[in-house]
Image 1 (cartoon, rainbow, N blue to C red):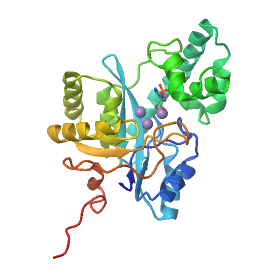
Image 2 (image 1 turned 120 degrees about the vertical axis):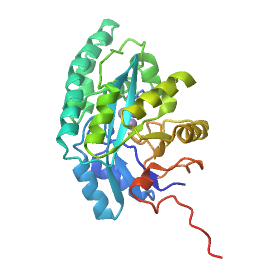
Image 3 (image 1 turned 30 degrees about the vertical axis):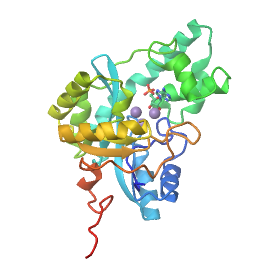
Image 4 (image 1 turned 90 degrees about the vertical axis):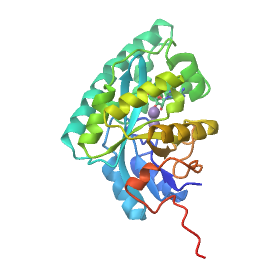
Amino acid sequence: MLPVDLHAHSNVSDGMLPPREVVARAHARGCQLFALTDHDDLRGLAAAADEAQRLGMRFLPGVEISVSWRKHTLHIVGLGFDPANAVLQAGLASVRLGRDERAVRMDAALAAVGVGGVLAGARKFADNPEMIGRAHFARHLIERGLAKDMKGVFKKYLARGKPGYVAHQWASLADAVGWIRAAGGVAVIAHPGRYEFGRQTMGELIEEFKAAGGEGIEVVSGSHHPADFERYARLAETHGLLASAGSDYHATGEGAREPGILPDMPPGPQPVWQRWHTDIGVTLPVAE
Ligand code: AMP
Ligand code: MN
Ligand code: MN
Ligand code: MN
């Protein structure tokens, strides 16, 4: 197993645990290098970094930026940036602005199919009111008994094409990558296996991403089937992208993986964390 986790959420976005508890959970599972990557918000990073330091675990500031690319929503993870950077902070503030208005439209869309009063219920799950999102709606719908789990509730109500889905304009790909770069960080395409792109479209995304200054792609992800690991390792190698690994942890019992440790990275691509820490995940030469 790999003692690295560069993608996880706290209750600053749509995770369930406070930042310190996510960090402690990763550490307890054997993590040596951790990044908190809340959606579109940096407000968990100070507490997370402090907790990691207290526990003696290495930490990278992270974020997962919501992006609209062509007709798709993508996620771009940023790692190892300066959280005080004004360009990044202003960019993320602009992305967050649309969330409340979208939530109101989701509430109306669900009311139109007979599921009323959802926004008030979803807000109770959103500890950060600026970051209300589909996961909070999902938890409320499950609590009401309208679906049995996260997978089911997205399939029935919240995925694209379902009654509660509302199209929304997020950041552009070039802006998201540009903000991460402006703050001195590395941009990574999150969970490419989730987009269900064909070869051609994935290739075009990668070329556009690289042209904007993007450098990495997630290979080992809690949002990937194990069969995807090898596939995206080859893609990373072919395109000269750094390979990342992250649990995409949100809450215990909500699917994906627990935070902190992950299956090994397939050999081939260069691991993204070697940008900061060359001693992790390297097979040391055996002494003669
Ligand atoms: P939002 O940014 O508000 O549109 O919410 C996106 C979040 O919803 C993702 O980061 C996941 O946490 C969650 N999500 C999206 N699709 C699914 C799914 N099919 N199953 C479970 N969670 C999902
Ligand atoms: Mn999420
Ligand atoms: Mn994501
Ligand atoms: Mn995520």
